[in-house]
Length: 308
Image 1 (spheres, rainbow, N blue to C red):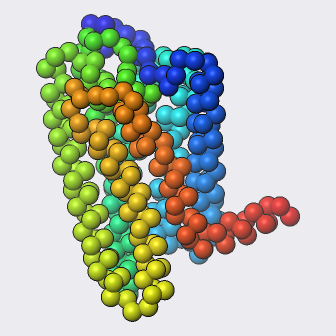
Image 2 (image 1 turned 120 degrees about the vertical axis):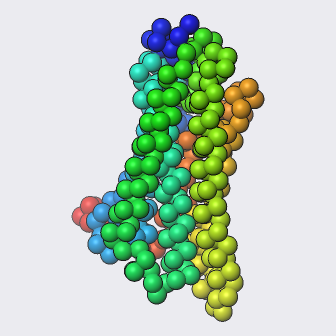
């Protein structure tokens, strides 16, 4: 393939060559996607149905659930279809759209997790000023900024990536369209623009990481000064799940996108991609909601009314 415009499709990396293993992967991804859809859907329903949950924390959780639903719906259905029918192909336009959506949801989630760390910091360290610092208008502007920045960031990467001439075949070494794998198909010395954007991504991720770590340092210092053991436990149970999600998401995402295109191990790349694109949407609500008694109470009320 001499140029990206000369090919009408790309070939994605299959999880297995045997039909039995393909069915196994189909069932595995089906279970993960159903768990993510159910858990995030219930969380969205709980926040939307009860006005008592119309607070900044739950507003950001609602946005995170929407991002998780969008993220897992971008990659998993295509993987399931390819595993079920034994196909590998994805159209050129479909690849571009998939890459755009993947970067859009990942970039927006990174920004939103940064905002949520600030929300956690205000809730624990400045509880008396919580309503002032995080009013409804401020929260709406912060969420809009996260979604808008994710859109512009994704648009920039997608336009730049697919403007590069590709001359190394059309086999993408991943189960979905991913920037590092597309760069490997590029002609020599033609991906320097995208490499520059990835350097910019390093800076942005480090800024997000700094704005996540600094509030948590203050949070842990404040928690250690709480005299009540029950109070310390409640504060830690609020912050630690968020920190665990951030560590999993940013750690695996950075290892996938911030390495040079020449460094590759197909099995490791596949595992890392699953960890940052498939696991977090299913794990996020399972980490947060069981620790939140208010959401559980609302869900029990909604389910009991639906069964009557």
